[in-house]
Length: 396
Image (spheres, rainbow, N blue to C red):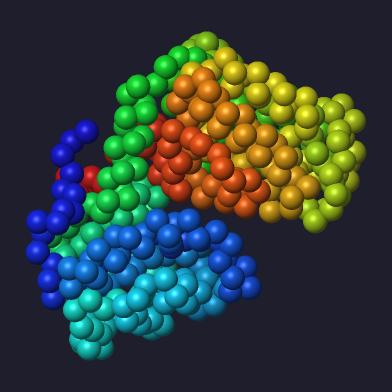
């Protein structure tokens, strides 16, 4: 791994304005945080900066706002939680960041924190805008990126900002993610199995195409599997389908054949007419037209367990079903328990990634053990694919 400038205790931050790009992109329903893992992981480093008497400027995104005032994607609940957990004085800036912001936050004292509202409410963020980068960077003297999960994006707060702040560093969470994944991938043993979920193939075509060249088994679960089922001529009822995915899937199968990679798709399911409904079991031949596939069924679970048993390395990203309804969380929980058991008893190397995957596991079962648990989703996949992540490249 090429040398990255990582933050260390030798860096003098006393009375300095430190812009910390964190990842507080957590599930929030009715202003209640559903999974606090990402926030809890960030708190020790924030407290370390406070202890060293820095003025901490916290930046994060939340979701994908459709407009600049989508209150359902406000970071205010995160602010309320941080207030409970951190003893230092913490402020919330609900305004958009402009060239006046630096002056408006000049009251901040050493050892205090200000959390800015969802960075994606600012127009320039998603565009990786140069002018917004100048405005954003002008607020701080030191920049630290501790959000590995966002580092695959060319967006101002993880990429362009470093153009205007000379002292830019990787934070401890980002470094831990990279080093742990590197170690696991460098020590990986065959057979290698990758379990991949999610809804869209188009967003993961690159990583799937890359993985079929590197793994022995590719297990497709979640809504993504519906497209593979339809491609193979099976009926999928009212299940989510990504239109125009046929050529992509055809290419995946061709690549898999050339590289001796087995592709495994579900053969039975838990279904319902509505996502809030109860689970009915169906095999691949008797799905009704008004039913939606919402989880994998018992036969598929047993098949995946057998594949995990013969594997020495497992990479997993994306839940197996609509875990938000506990009736459709059985597939995800069963996979998680099997991987954890084999990690403990068979020295399986297990790397689990993705916020949804973590939420599904943590909200339904506790006490599981994996080689590495990553809150990152897209960045995790692109990193194991071997891509250079823009937010990390600028720290080299």
